Image (cartoon, rainbow, N blue to C red; front, top):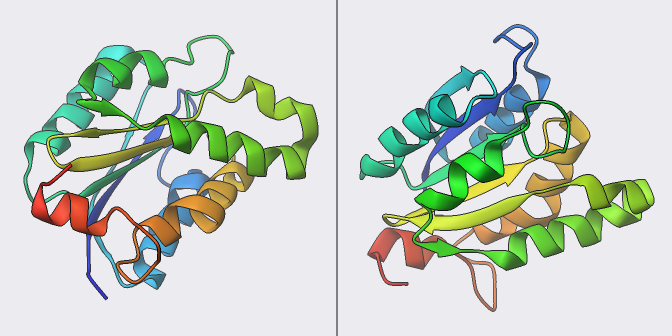
Length: 166
Protein backbone atom coordinates (compact mmCIF):
# COMPACT_ATOMS: atom_id res chain seq x y z
CA UNK A 1 0.00 0.00 0.00
CA UNK A 2 1.28 3.41 -0.96
CA UNK A 3 0.28 5.98 1.65
CA UNK A 4 -0.80 9.28 0.17
CA UNK A 5 -1.07 12.67 1.85
CA UNK A 6 -4.63 13.86 1.34
CA UNK A 7 -6.08 17.27 2.17
CA UNK A 8 -9.83 17.80 2.68
CA UNK A 9 -11.51 21.10 1.95
CA UNK A 10 -15.14 21.77 2.81
CA UNK A 11 -16.79 24.64 0.97
CA UNK A 12 -19.80 25.94 2.89
CA UNK A 13 -21.33 29.16 4.13
CA UNK A 14 -22.97 27.36 7.06
CA UNK A 15 -20.80 24.49 8.29
CA UNK A 16 -18.09 24.45 10.90
CA UNK A 17 -15.97 21.55 12.13
CA UNK A 18 -18.72 20.31 14.49
CA UNK A 19 -21.38 20.21 11.72
CA UNK A 20 -19.24 19.17 8.74
CA UNK A 21 -20.43 15.58 8.31
CA UNK A 22 -19.23 15.35 4.70
CA UNK A 23 -15.68 16.43 5.51
CA UNK A 24 -15.66 14.12 8.53
CA UNK A 25 -16.79 11.22 6.34
CA UNK A 26 -14.00 11.86 3.83
CA UNK A 27 -11.40 12.15 6.60
CA UNK A 28 -12.54 8.83 8.07
CA UNK A 29 -12.33 7.22 4.62
CA UNK A 30 -8.82 8.59 4.09
CA UNK A 31 -7.63 7.22 7.44
CA UNK A 32 -9.42 3.87 7.05
CA UNK A 33 -7.58 3.31 3.77
CA UNK A 34 -4.25 3.97 5.50
CA UNK A 35 -3.60 7.36 3.96
CA UNK A 36 -2.52 10.44 5.92
CA UNK A 37 -4.71 13.48 6.45
CA UNK A 38 -2.39 16.27 5.34
CA UNK A 39 -4.69 19.16 6.24
CA UNK A 40 -8.34 20.04 6.67
CA UNK A 41 -10.02 23.40 6.18
CA UNK A 42 -13.49 24.83 5.86
CA UNK A 43 -14.01 27.96 3.75
CA UNK A 44 -16.97 30.05 2.69
CA UNK A 45 -18.31 29.47 -0.79
CA UNK A 46 -16.15 32.19 -2.30
CA UNK A 47 -14.03 31.70 -5.41
CA UNK A 48 -11.00 33.44 -3.93
CA UNK A 49 -11.09 31.68 -0.55
CA UNK A 50 -11.40 28.31 -2.31
CA UNK A 51 -8.52 29.15 -4.67
CA UNK A 52 -6.32 30.46 -1.87
CA UNK A 53 -6.50 27.22 0.13
CA UNK A 54 -6.33 24.95 -2.91
CA UNK A 55 -3.40 26.89 -4.39
CA UNK A 56 -1.45 26.59 -1.15
CA UNK A 57 -2.01 22.83 -1.12
CA UNK A 58 -1.22 22.46 -4.84
CA UNK A 59 2.08 24.29 -4.26
CA UNK A 60 2.92 22.02 -1.31
CA UNK A 61 4.77 19.05 -2.80
CA UNK A 62 3.84 16.86 0.18
CA UNK A 63 0.09 17.05 -0.65
CA UNK A 64 -0.75 14.33 -3.19
CA UNK A 65 -4.54 14.59 -3.29
CA UNK A 66 -7.16 17.24 -2.55
CA UNK A 67 -10.74 16.23 -1.83
CA UNK A 68 -13.20 19.12 -1.99
CA UNK A 69 -16.79 18.81 -0.82
CA UNK A 70 -19.41 21.45 -1.49
CA UNK A 71 -20.08 24.31 -3.85
CA UNK A 72 -20.68 22.17 -6.95
CA UNK A 73 -24.40 22.77 -7.43
CA UNK A 74 -26.42 25.55 -9.01
CA UNK A 75 -27.62 27.25 -5.84
CA UNK A 76 -26.72 30.73 -4.70
CA UNK A 77 -23.00 31.08 -4.30
CA UNK A 78 -21.97 27.58 -5.49
CA UNK A 79 -18.65 28.33 -7.16
CA UNK A 80 -16.23 25.44 -6.65
CA UNK A 81 -15.97 24.55 -10.38
CA UNK A 82 -15.33 28.20 -11.27
CA UNK A 83 -12.70 28.44 -8.54
CA UNK A 84 -10.88 25.23 -9.37
CA UNK A 85 -10.98 24.84 -13.15
CA UNK A 86 -8.46 27.65 -13.83
CA UNK A 87 -6.01 25.96 -11.43
CA UNK A 88 -6.01 22.62 -13.28
CA UNK A 89 -3.09 21.73 -15.54
CA UNK A 90 -5.30 18.94 -16.90
CA UNK A 91 -9.03 18.37 -16.55
CA UNK A 92 -10.27 14.92 -15.53
CA UNK A 93 -13.56 14.78 -17.42
CA UNK A 94 -14.03 11.13 -16.51
CA UNK A 95 -14.49 11.85 -12.81
CA UNK A 96 -17.53 14.08 -13.27
CA UNK A 97 -18.97 11.75 -15.89
CA UNK A 98 -18.53 8.64 -13.75
CA UNK A 99 -19.69 10.38 -10.57
CA UNK A 100 -22.95 11.40 -12.26
CA UNK A 101 -23.39 7.92 -13.74
CA UNK A 102 -23.14 6.13 -10.40
CA UNK A 103 -25.09 8.91 -8.69
CA UNK A 104 -27.94 8.43 -11.19
CA UNK A 105 -28.42 4.92 -9.82
CA UNK A 106 -28.98 6.46 -6.36
CA UNK A 107 -30.85 9.73 -6.96
CA UNK A 108 -32.10 9.52 -10.54
CA UNK A 109 -32.19 12.57 -12.75
CA UNK A 110 -31.40 14.91 -9.83
CA UNK A 111 -27.77 14.09 -10.57
CA UNK A 112 -27.99 16.46 -13.55
CA UNK A 113 -27.56 19.28 -11.03
CA UNK A 114 -24.15 18.00 -9.93
CA UNK A 115 -21.15 19.85 -11.30
CA UNK A 116 -18.62 17.41 -9.81
CA UNK A 117 -15.22 17.88 -11.46
CA UNK A 118 -11.67 16.62 -11.19
CA UNK A 119 -8.25 17.56 -12.41
CA UNK A 120 -4.48 17.59 -11.99
CA UNK A 121 -2.37 20.52 -10.86
CA UNK A 122 1.35 20.33 -10.03
CA UNK A 123 1.30 16.54 -9.54
CA UNK A 124 -1.73 16.81 -7.26
CA UNK A 125 -4.97 15.03 -8.14
CA UNK A 126 -8.10 16.97 -7.17
CA UNK A 127 -11.67 15.72 -6.81
CA UNK A 128 -14.56 18.17 -6.29
CA UNK A 129 -17.81 16.63 -5.05
CA UNK A 130 -21.18 17.88 -3.89
CA UNK A 131 -21.54 18.79 -0.22
CA UNK A 132 -23.97 16.11 0.91
CA UNK A 133 -22.58 13.21 2.90
CA UNK A 134 -24.31 10.75 0.57
CA UNK A 135 -22.61 12.36 -2.44
CA UNK A 136 -19.24 12.09 -0.68
CA UNK A 137 -19.94 8.42 0.06
CA UNK A 138 -20.75 7.86 -3.61
CA UNK A 139 -17.62 9.65 -4.78
CA UNK A 140 -15.30 8.02 -2.27
CA UNK A 141 -16.66 4.47 -2.30
CA UNK A 142 -17.46 4.09 -5.98
CA UNK A 143 -14.71 6.11 -7.68
CA UNK A 144 -11.97 7.81 -5.68
CA UNK A 145 -10.94 5.11 -3.17
CA UNK A 146 -9.99 2.63 -5.90
CA UNK A 147 -8.12 5.23 -7.90
CA UNK A 148 -5.96 6.00 -4.85
CA UNK A 149 -5.06 2.31 -4.39
CA UNK A 150 -1.74 1.43 -6.03
CA UNK A 151 -2.91 -2.17 -6.50
CA UNK A 152 -6.12 -1.31 -8.37
CA UNK A 153 -5.95 -2.52 -11.99
CA UNK A 154 -5.81 -1.83 -14.82
CA UNK A 155 -4.85 1.68 -13.75
CA UNK A 156 -4.94 4.15 -10.88
CA UNK A 157 -3.57 7.59 -10.04
CA UNK A 158 -0.94 6.58 -7.49
CA UNK A 159 1.98 6.20 -9.87
CA UNK A 160 1.03 9.38 -11.71
CA UNK A 161 1.00 11.54 -8.59
CA UNK A 162 3.96 9.97 -6.85
CA UNK A 163 6.28 10.05 -9.86
CA UNK A 164 5.06 13.26 -11.46
CA UNK A 165 4.54 11.56 -14.83
CA UNK A 166 1.24 12.46 -16.49
